[in-house]
Length: 212
DNA sequence: CGACCGATTGACT
DNA sequence: GTCAATCGGTCGG
Image (cartoon, rainbow, N blue to C red; front, side, top):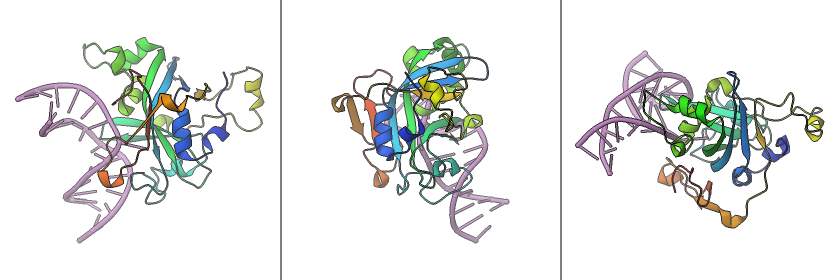
């Protein structure tokens, strides 16, 4: 298991979106929890894509999308939710992958607490099966926007020694690439028909996907 | 400025 | 199935 290097993200956005499936997200929160979860659903947003925040050019909000690959892009939406993206493509070329669903692995109790409003119980399968839900479960906000998820150049060798000290607070662990027949390709969610593309990817049969 | 609206979710008919 | 919540980003005047 090693931390995904910057070259993983420095590729065509659709390729990264597909290959993110099955990878493990690790997030060390400031409250001391180390959350882990498997990526089970993604969507690609390209630079010449009318549905992308980056389509009309660089602004203060979408600036991370134009920055180096391997950083987070987290934005606030609908006045109450956040969405987590990973920046792709070389610096200067906008691209990002929206993380739409995760399969919870560790610190599930805390995820439940973060998702609980009032005294209602939250079902295991309703913790991270949506882009807004998963940010709520892990406690991700704009405070985690534009975070580097890779080792800085020169310190990458640490991971080859199995040393994760100094690892980015939010990073991904490698996992075997899924076979094509394990991946379902579908249209993106919440996108106008005229801008629609088959750029949503999810793991076939996985119970934690937001919509089938 | 004011107005519109969104890569969503949960409550309710 | 429908719809309100809630607010920052963006754009037109």
